Image (cartoon, rainbow, N blue to C red; front, side, top):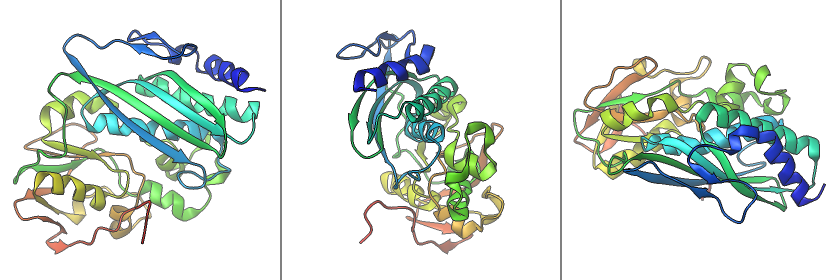
Length: 299
């Protein structure tokens, strides 16, 4: 297949998820044209996922597509926004129709869950890599930043910590046959679940937020630095994936749950794990922690 046939195959597989009321011109033209509801702003982020770095190169392509969407859209939720549309640049070494169709099916299924339309993209030849430009909308002036945490706020997470790190530890990621055949560890890695349904509640009730991509402690460190505060976590309150120690879980990567601060927050599935402090630093039960999460460039 040539490039244009691959594009047609992807758009065919995406089906209705390539369109949405706010997408006026979708795949097939030089640019995508979108609308925003009156009084709303656009939030945007971009992620690159490289085969052999962000997923095993021999993973099921359906899982690669699903994971790529969810880890990228997680940033949108961290701003308190609802996903609107995604643009995807894809590089492939070969025009493998079966592989591409499975990848597009994973993207389609993630688009259905998130509500984001796949509004356009590009294909070129090269090592397996997906770059996703993700966009969401929220009422003007309400974007949730990392810089609003205040001493006394609670620290919350929207799900378990350490599941993806456990999956990496088992070393069997290439063995998963698809989205319908994942065990809990495989789901934690390949099918993270950013809390799209909590976007409005987080935006209106939280003081600061970040998605947990590089490790709970390391990402909390970014939030604390931006806010000029510290946090004291309680070990017994941290929801740790079964089989992981607390130390490994809080330093493991790829959870893609929300971590946020708030004067008060009570919704099912959200757990308070500590308190914001005036003194900078991160503690667990009063013990200072080293931040050793994932980094792309280690010295």
